[in-house]
Image 1 (cartoon, rainbow, N blue to C red):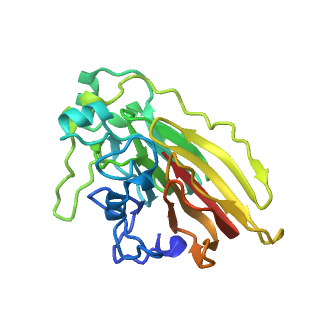
Image 2 (image 1 turned 60 degrees about the vertical axis):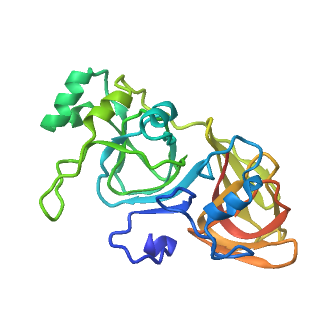
Length: 307
């Protein structure tokens, strides 16, 4: 995070950053422009039209964008769906998510679902006695792989994997296995076995296949569709105006805001008033719905997110 994405945070280790969020557990702050210094949550509260015409949420943005750097195996988790979270977690949203692999060490893997069907009794016992790994489906990963993880899917990020995560605006996580690790005081982290068994899909998960991805080109820009679900749409966008010397025109429509997470490269955004906003790898740019057209110049790769 610090070396590749220039995240100047006094945290060691720094394994996760929330790049675009209005969630109360980690709201984003606006770094530049007219509203610099304000929280994104407060801005959207004052200007709900910035979200567009899709259904609104009380928490502001319906999505949350993260970077996660797993130097060791992360805990095995499952998230509830909206109906369960609303009923049993004080009206919160559930959590379906998308992983885009930014980098991966040789031999790195993720856990995606279960290898075969398992009963609640057997899964409970395997969690208690530590034998659960025999049920977990491990998938080798490489850079640019893509995984959509609907609520209820058992999952975990393996050691050596760097991802961008697009998810519902939720911080609900039920932990079912943590490799029997202990903290500095010798305590294991809490497991949420009863909740896991209520929300997890206990059937065998089909091994996810990487989707066919087709690049669409226009002068100075290439774009490909990655994922569409009921919560968000995600695209990969690459710009290169170094050769053609043109600017790439960009704007959001009236239906939704747009978020650009810069995964690589750098450049600048030219506003209608002529001002330039520089961006670099790791920066996140928020475009309100129905924004005025801007011009993007540089050589960079983005994840583009809308609702």
